[in-house]
Image (cartoon, rainbow, N blue to C red; front, side):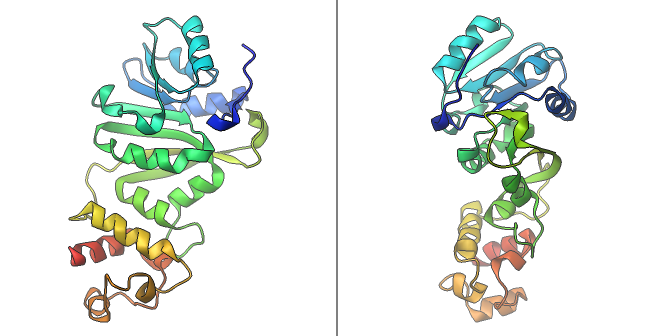
Length: 254
């Protein structure tokens, strides 16, 4: 099929066979896995996954690609869900699902946050993303890449940067390097926020103006006495705090 990538869907099709094989090896699909692929495109991952699996679910928004998939794969092998992934309810597929995908880079962060809402039923996730985004996901405190995304995802997930993928592995080639990441929901949260909405609010406020000190960014939420009680230096910036410290602030406020 000659399918032109559509900019509005952020399409960049993976074409490098060596890269594809290394991704499939990292995913390690098993025959009976309940797996859903986000944005299958022209089947670069779909096809090799199906050689090892009984069936696969795919979520796709592009009607042209859906028509192509319906002509290419048996309905018993590929279950197609025509949907915007940000509106898709992953719990409809089943309870213990695995999620994979070469995510559209323009909406990768919203997709990750959407998946956190479904995290209870997910075994693991393997994604191709913009390299810079993966670096932010796995970043440690007091580094330039560490931010709101790092804290919110690390609270729920154990993440591992797997491989870097050059632009020429895609068609059309994106303007940036890509990376493949593994995300595994934590079975037992090391630090539990009593109110996850409040935790999210604290993290967002703290990183809202990342050059400012916590005393300024959390003004109205936490006073000097609160910082003292938590034994957190109010002159630090958000990027200096660990996930555990953000949870401690939220639980103190709760």
